Length: 608
Ligand code: ADP
Ligand code: MG
Image (cartoon, rainbow, N blue to C red; front, side):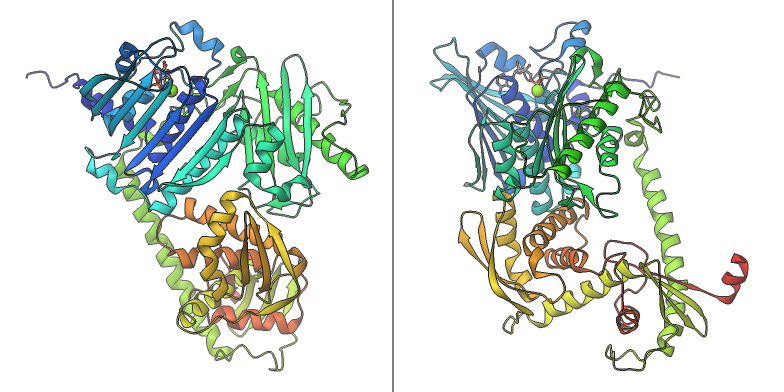
């Protein structure tokens, strides 16, 4: 038999490699921004058109490239940053794998203009799917101007997998924010379809965080800072009375944004007992360590990292955050920018190892998921869907029998409430029915009910006038970040249908005149911020099965729902149950959590 194994042609190999580095427009953005940072630019502008699907352009005033380097840069494994394996131990640049430009070029059309600072003339280069089409000398400013067009133009199958513009743009904004936070001494601008939407002048770490998070954070931030011989930590946390549903957590190691569940836990656990359940602290923390004590070469996107001395980092981080919180609580009026925090614990003894002690635990497996074949994944997803469907059918039968026992037309709280409805642990509602005991998660149920009601309002009110639900006694002004301002303007029409009434006063300020009945008016700034964050989170994680209006409704419902721990009157419980059973999908919340369970007498006997 003749041989069947062949070496793939280079352009095919590059397209395959490109899949690892460039899995959506935002990954190309990340690589291009990092190249500009590595080129020591002091000014970086990012231009995005159609969420990066037609154009990503990065202009920097960094060192630029010579005519020869400009061509070599697009070859696989071409880098100026390392030359030997040993250099991997001392990486101080963002890039080093020498595969970004080659990978991006393999799946896009590129136009490059660059001039090295020591050359008089610059170079213009056009590359199409990895092949150089045109090269000439041009007059150009020192630095690099790279335009990446029509991503996946030659791999239509991949292009089909791109999400909506909204979703892809959110990812780009996320990448831009991280690079901007890590490099406050660089002047950044972001242009979206030719309009400048963000301008971040160079400044201090503190000023950069305020530019990105918004002015309201002036009062919320507390500095964390510690310098030891092996690790130094610097950054800011938000006071425990300001928490989020996770979206504002930034961790950097040697200025690289990283995901590290262990270190995240070190920070979160320092807040234990101080913040409500399911809430998360807000932080932006920078860790600096000797590059030879970490491994960043674990993942193609370099967002994962391994430390030689994870225990030390973990315990220092935990201690420094705990201290900052403690000092803040004792004397909240101290100026944390100038006050030196005396840190006591300097050893790792108080660290409970848990899962994080052995950093090599999962070593080498981080890529295994991407190796699972598509067919397997599809079959797996299909079987999960079938199981879910079967479960839902069973539940649906239960609900139909329950609906028979409750008057469902309009939630009517004047109905004599069956006194046997009661609350468990301030979070669940139990209601005996003839077919069994119904247990409801009050938070998930309330989210479902509000979501349905918001969606209904949304469709009913499309043509009629808006009706504010609760006019504020004193209109309140709120101050947001630039990107939140953009988002709030975008979702304003839908929020108005849900009972909000507000106007933009220019800059990042809005005046709130009315809000829906749910929610406390003194929290209005936080409620708006949370709705924006939740909406963005929905866009980034939720895929495209919900419409924009539904995502806004889901965000608003989640933010204003009844929470665990809230004491309810019997009328409120009764009303919640009847509205839930009458809702479009009584078994799950719009975020996919289970809302109820009916325990049949058989279930109960099994429990005993
Ligand atoms: P890496 O960043 O890992 O070295 P890349 O493929 O991203 O690999 O880039 C290859 C090389 O091209 C870099 O090492 C650098 O020398 C050069 N380069 C890329 N972008 C720029 C830029 N904006 N300014 C100057 N040089 C650049
Ligand atoms: Mg690079």
